[in-house]
Length: 329
Image (cartoon, rainbow, N blue to C red; front, side):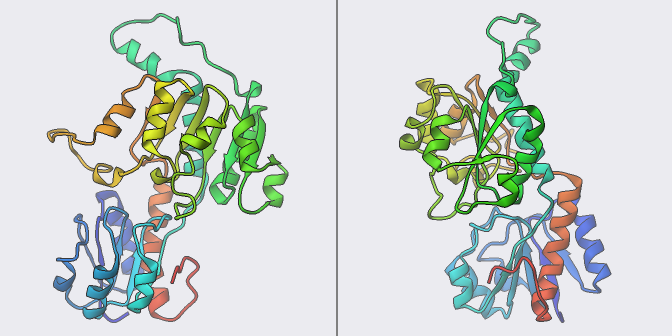
């Protein structure tokens, strides 16, 4: 690669790994904490490749601007890539890759979310802040007595099944394809049966036009009363208005959310002195039985290192015409 690599949305904890990877591969890198916008693309001088995270949106106009600037390679340092229009990238000759990291961090976090919901930890934490050490209303449930359904058995979903296999719970899974590895850990069922039988349901799907709002009023109506729903995947998998209604009617017993719809406006930003204007998120997160964190299930030292490596090495592999395991188009 002849020109520079520009790394946008570069967090401080990423910069060391980004610069080390660039130095090891003998390429110049320029790191910026800002989001790459359409207006910034013409300012990129002597750039061969660009790497971003997930807060920007890259569609027809952005791809045209990259093409006009002579930039042919784009990587996202995320596993998800719904912020990039791959069809537009193909039309403008832009090669795109994403990142990968071991599934353990998100899988561990998912189990933590399930346990926090089952043991009413949010309410216990709130009480402790005001020196209320009472137990009334805080009795939890044990996983050995429950049926847990996993929707999607890619690398993360399968690792969640492995993690849960030691708790003695009944495990179900559903997905587009059966998996021999998942079959050894859980019972494969159709999605509607998983909804009907599960006490806890955890989503591990990519966000596509087919999976958007897979959790909605209709699907929630098919679930057990008091079902616990966990989402450490993508916010758009769940209709936030259906979640609010489910909590208000007590159809949903608890929510463990590391991601919600339209979160791009707020996650990973310091907004403590701003007006928080997203009414749906503000309303949903205040319920006593909703555990909400801001898209951090992935956030481990090992994952950050892997994402930074993929962000740089993927660009170099595509530019050199070498096999790139994470290439999308």
